[in-house]
Length: 452
Image (cartoon, rainbow, N blue to C red):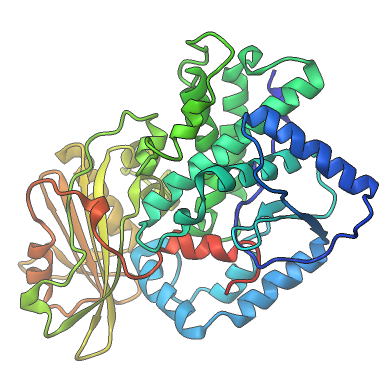
């Protein structure tokens, strides 16, 4: 029955944009439509609005002009830092035109709910189901406060996990609306196998067809498809692997409420495994080791998580002797990316440490990183030291199930920095304090155009 879900807006965004004014006092046919759909959103999500959510419409040309203006206004230093950190990590070339990329990074959006104006913006004419999706974001915000999703303390991994619930829950309610409107039925009659297969196929089409670096497709490629499956499993018990409900209708939507409060997920692996992820291992650095602090300065740090790690490695899919990148990323157990500046030379470097299920998976990642950087060992007695295809120094080291990769760090400092990134034991990584937004959060804030 997936054909009945062709109205689900897989590429509808939730982002942040200032308020756009405009409704007349006299109710128009459009406003009556909005009122009717707001009521239907309450019914399918089983929550009530505490106050009205305004809706305005802009044209696609206006949206694109706004995107271009936002990209033009982006600080050159901010773009340069993005290239020097996440670009150097391997997501895109250091000389990539990020201003143009930012201008196009929201092309997939059809509408959004603004956390600043608490209103909905539509891009041109949209189906009723799309508006239901955005109204559900309004309900989520009024009942659970979505603003913490923008918390600067969230890593990119945790940010995407939170947003998968936000988008998956709205898409689930949207699907319920479509079932009721078109079939006079409800979610217990959904054929989940074909539906989820179709949604995941759309995700693959999105990634395969993207002309932008895949990092800029992280949000739409993850939050909608995997978020829908996670929320569907949470509400009905169905999943792609077991596409049969395991509880009797009517379904208890308070279980969805809990995903915003007491059971909020913390990692993309938790979403991908439907809460069956391995314990997250503490590995890597979020602060500069004191022995190196006189020479190296921390710029920022992040946790990539399973999905962003997959997007980093995905371009290697099909490379000889490397195997399946999706399966390799699924062996992720933890990671930490540290971005640093050399106080003496002003050079920016990266230190990415990761933990994996076993030594075999870690060896696969070690080989993949050499290939990702087009690196080769420098002739001599140190096999961990090499040079990337772009001429920068590399240090790639594996110890059993852990891997550390350094790039563009002074050769004399590499052994000490790598040693510091191989701590033992498990620590609660999610409680570490960040001082700047993660990349995933920064990109999401730009998706809908203006960013202030």
